[in-house]
Image (cartoon, rainbow over all chains, first blue to last red; front, side, top):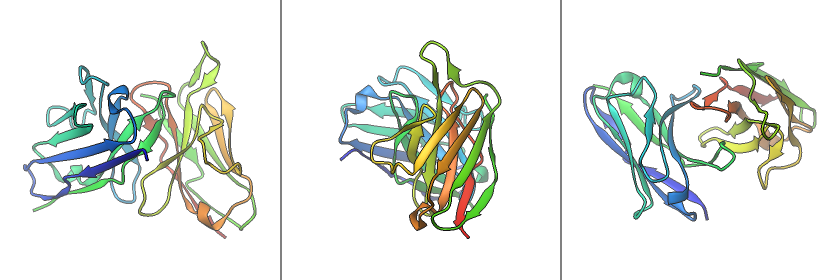
Length: 118
Length: 113
């Protein structure tokens, strides 16, 4: 079964750090660009970051640039998002997402909640 | 960035009736080299992640019921649920997969009347 399973979310104080992980299974992870997409509860979907198949290229939304780092370990079939200097506005559900050959997002993880609050 | 705008924000439809959601992009998402419109539709049920329903404007993902159909070209697109079922209650999002960054519409909430 093709699957993405996120972990690492939780409650953190403003200015703190968290590292999200996404374990991929059921497909050849190294063949796909991967994304992180976040969603404030009750609100819409916003892309956060993306990484090329071999990790050689990354991009970030302006809102997280310089604070978040995306990475991947193709040997372990795992995607990461290191989040530093967290702010209240980073509070959201974070989804790990696979980019299909069509360019659409064809597989989504269940999401992990990140809450930034004192 | 391409701005995606959906209408309406919400709609209530009787069971078995047709539901229609519109999506407009701020620029064309038609890729001339293959004549494909790079527009996708997602369904998000409460407490669940989004699920891809349709890509290339009208291609249903494997396993998606045929009561879901997509149409349109260029900048104007439509998702139609031909006969609304109770399990179709959800928020529906359009997304352009034409260019980076991928952008989504604000969502349309579909409820039972």
